[in-house]
Image (cartoon, rainbow, N blue to C red; front, side, top):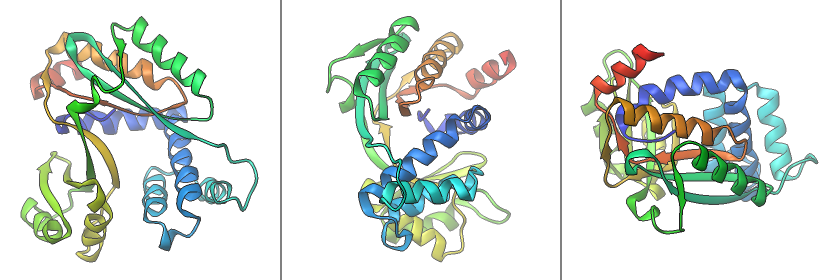
Length: 253
């Protein structure tokens, strides 16, 4: 789930839950395979693969699984699937816009899974282009807060690399840039000795829909249903929930 920055804490919680299900591992492995197939298996010469591997390591994916994924993707080892990226667009409860990014070797299965999830959970699929214009492709780097690290330090490290926004998430900093500058921003952090958890291009909403507790609950339920499909890599949504709404939802869990 990728929504407004206030949802970062929820995303971390969901990642932990997904990891227990094995779903997160599967998605991270798939990202590595595709990156290796697209740009080769050399991490030094393939920054997309480097970041995919780093994210997998941060999420405790075993080294053997990572190595085999690189080999499958680069063709050194047999067994890699021919994945293609497909985007689906739709609306959830309350008019919240959703972009669903699939990485699949079976287009029909992916389409069926996504359609059923929308239909059964208060949403509906939309025509291509009807939702995508509400999102911009952006570079997003997440850097965990460490002792003594503040927003000014982060901004000073990444400003010349193309970053245009640093957002304090409470437990981490979210650094945004043009999608093409994400590697430069990540590299600038490394050179400044600042750790990062992930670096990737994401779809960030250009406008947001405020939701109350009931609305947030329904949208999250829909997103969970969509993410049940193994073909779904990411779900982006343009909803915004206040800290009070978040707290109320936490109490329900």
